[in-house]
Image (tube, rainbow, N blue to C red; front, side, top):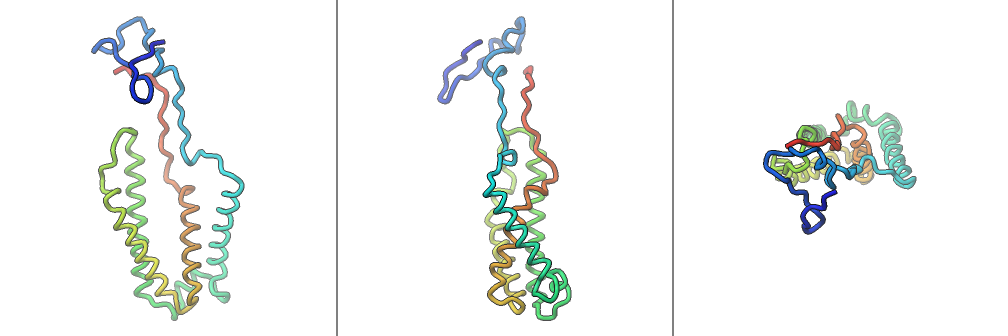
Length: 188
């Protein structure tokens, strides 16, 4: 096994000639290709029982809010038919949430299509983060203003609970998994 050239964090493999591997094949089993290079992703991380219980509580609370609503009707019926709701702020808040969802779907599909880990994310995802954050805060305020006549000050924890349940459920609603890097030999 060849050691390679020492660098700051380890050893770097050097090529013997510019034509690629033209030897008997012994070079294919050097340090770089013989080590397993499996990295666990955050979704494969083993969850503790505390995290599982916490996620269950967020989801159960959101189901409770949606099912019981104001005690007389469920949350969806209230949003659809209740005359106490201020409609214009509610619709503007829904537009803001829709724009955020479109942006997140666009960036997740764009990152799904990039297969190289060395590709730098130069597309608008990083530059638009302040805009998306501001849009989310404005949507939260619009929803609070629109639903205040029904729940008054309780609308703030209610909306936060629905937001957290959405954040807990979002990783499970992925359109597809990113392909892990394989340990294939490259001939280049």
